Length: 233
Image 1 (cartoon, rainbow, N blue to C red):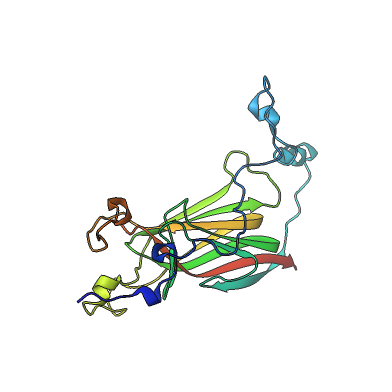
Image 2: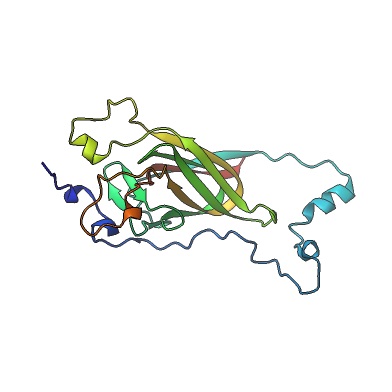
């Protein structure tokens, strides 16, 4: 017997909007570096990107930094003034979190006044293993060959899909559970998070008019996001 779950979902997948509070995503590339034609690319690096040279040339010991941490906790559905949610074409709000469309179409962006030094994501995959991607916009652009980008993979734990729920499977199943990923990052003003899971193909979602590439359910549900900032010791 088919069950109508439309009352438990909200998103463009159900005919709703896919973006709530618009917060621009974190920049990935240094906006201050200018590539000059005819000049070697390494010679176009900014003073901040070459700051290590000053430390080396002075031959003085570096000062050790010390600071205290403060953590902000954000819960789904992430309706905060400094948080932007982009569900993407197949994203949704559901009882277990904000399920984003696969990267780069779905994203959550958080901006803080203080320097962000760590981000923890707690959630669950549609089809494990899951993964979470972090892009951060640093306070000082000193990372010319990497940017501030990280990825956590092989995340265990799934939320029970509703076709299985209808058959009696619940959170007691041994595969049902959450995963978490912590990212320790250079001081940043803004972070953008994306996620997904395995792209196994099935038929349970298929209905008349559905596209085959919408059936793999390779998404990740974001439940809690903890953002840690630094304060003076």
